[in-house]
Length: 389
Image 1 (tube, rainbow, N blue to C red):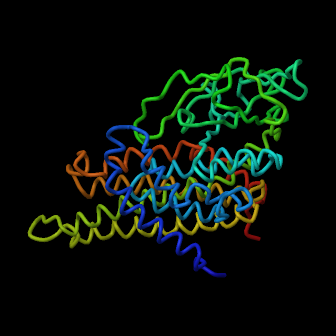
Image 2: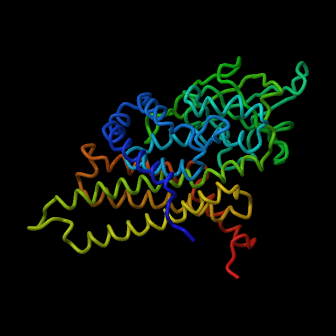
């Protein structure tokens, strides 16, 4: 058992760390305050070849896998959760294509994401179907005028990066939307410029500002046969399972950033004749947070390794979901402790602790809530997918 990163991954980690310190740290608060899309940082990621980390080399990526992307997102999110999301969006919508897409679809859609000429979004959630995937109402009807083609109608909501996307992976039901048959769900690639695609609303968010969360409406949108991925409910789950360590990396990075900032603060802030850091109670809080961060890191790196081996089917769900669940909850806990360590100052916009606190809450909701992850872990234990005997 080797806990050391390979030399290539270690160099990637260090190079992204430098980029985060030099380019992201000075911009993070401004991005949050303005809410404007940080195109300058996207360009930095493109120049550093970070947009294709998880995309295989034969499709224009660097082939660093989910582990490579996990490491990069951890470093970036120490200063900005929204920039961690920017990197995450290079894998979320491309995942279904890498898992179940045709060779032609991979050649057409993956290189543009890897080189930064195109952006994409993952359209699953709906106003009445978030965690309840089988409850989706978006439909895909066979197009009588096009062999193998479909027409999509429906609305998707809370779509991260929806305004910036050039294309979407859209999940819809073939047949009666009132039926909850998993086999009726299909995945489709939809061009954002296709007739009938509109983006009527950008959500006003509590945190993670800078990448729009959008409502997207599909009104009789034609999808040709060569843009049908197919799949089904299992494709959704395999796609999301593989994403667990990537989302978890945002939790680890955010927790690290919050704790490092608070630690530096208490080492300088004086009270009762000494620095706050000299009080044992403060040291214990820092120690507990640091321990939980390291536990989350071990879960996350293991999950990333599993996903890179293609181990994201049902029997591996408990290990993958544990990483996402625990790292997200640690981010919320540590950001709260960090804010408390700064006292009143931590609640003010003079310090980034209030931003860490706001941004952390998103992680327990997106891509499977903490409660969904607990359900998946629990069923895994009951079904002996995770067992110790």
